[in-house]
Length: 114
Length: 110
Image (cartoon, rainbow over all chains, first blue to last red; front, side):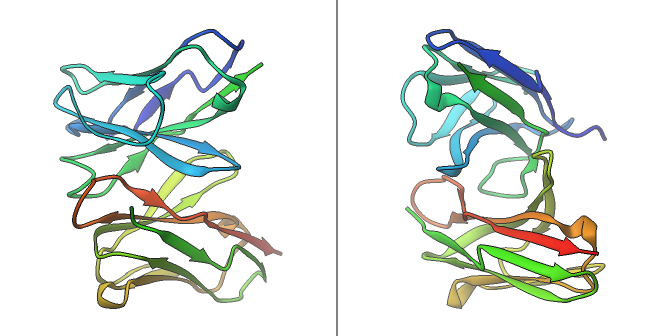
């Protein structure tokens, strides 16, 4: 089976712009979660989607949003980018949910905000 | 929420040495995973181990859920083992928010 894929792998944006990141889960996996990794805060949970519905959300402002499509692919959007949004954004997929089993991570999208 | 602490934060070894990494968590968990993050940022699954012991080649892990800790053992370390090792826990009650430790940075010298 192909692993989790994320696009794009690298992105440079300007403060105030918005960005959309994409994640394709492992075939058959229905849960997709998103994480932000920064040197200062470490790995932090953003949100989880299952069957096109957001199930859980971490402690991030409303500028961070996401959605999931019927084929389980997911997108994450960050509006009004700030310098502090520069980070590695990781997507993970699970067969059922993060509560019930293993997560498998994609290679990440490295976002730089200038 | 649940607190996850990893130790040591940094570890430097010579090739061939053995090591033990520790993950303490503050609440009961029903999901615990160990990951290895390579220099390119990819998180690689090592173990899904909410309880018990598992082995995979030179690596093994043990979680003692009642005492709220997990251990990752690396034997006969190789330079390719270098990277950052994370544990991630999800509590069995309350919010379903996975929490990662800050990681153990491992450098293995040839």
